[in-house]
Amino acid sequence: PESTERPRGGLPDARAPESTDFLGVAEDSGLIVPLGERVLRDACAQGAAWRRSWPELGLSVNLSARQIIAPGFPDRLAAILAETGLPPQALTVEVDERILIADGALVTERLAGLRRAGVRLAIDNFGTGYASLACLRQLPLDTIKLDPSFVAGLGRDDSLTVLTQAVVRAGGELGLQVIAEGIEEPRQLAVLRKMGCRHGQGYLLAAPTAAPGMAALMGPSGINVSECETTRATG
Image 1 (tube, rainbow, N blue to C red):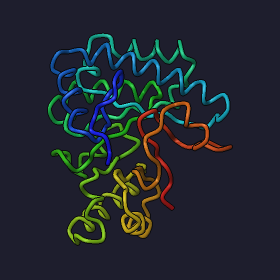
Image 2 (image 1 turned 90 degrees about the vertical axis):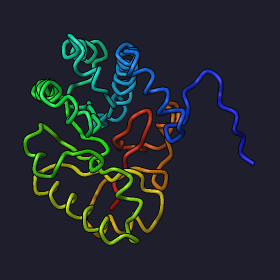
Image 3 (image 1 turned 30 degrees about the vertical axis):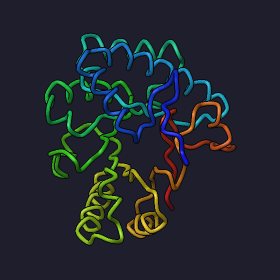
Image 4 (image 1 turned 60 degrees about the vertical axis):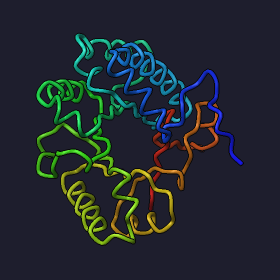
């Protein structure tokens, strides 16, 4: 049987309830700002090191609303990129769909500034909040990441399949990359391929892997990766 003991000296698995509790406490206390900056700096440094072997590699980092609206955040991000040597276009900032609603104006303004500086932008967990397909053209986005709740029902729930197809088609027509999150079963992958969704992530494709193990996954040409998740083409 699997052990239920939590590892010492580390964070809980991203899919475990403890992960949400930890991030919630960090967000509410404001510690997410210095913690997030440390994670961002370490990730950019690792990304720059990887790019010496895989020049086309891109890195994605999740940011919270508190980080984005913190005073001076754009300048600190620019300084981190300069310090680590990671080109802005090699970094994708991921934000949860819900923060675009809760902190809309200021967050959108900050994200637009990052986009003008060359950083790529992704909206995470799309479909769980109140953002609509119509509002996508008003946001400075490069990527939509479709929430796992959509992917879970593919091939079984006709309504979810139709909605997923609509997002994939709309994203393509808007020139956005669409990434399906939470691919865990072959049937889900098969339906996404049929829809024309070319990118995805999930345990069927690759498990979360720490930095030392990433070289074996990337191969000679590289793939888009971050320290917490791996994105691969579905077709």
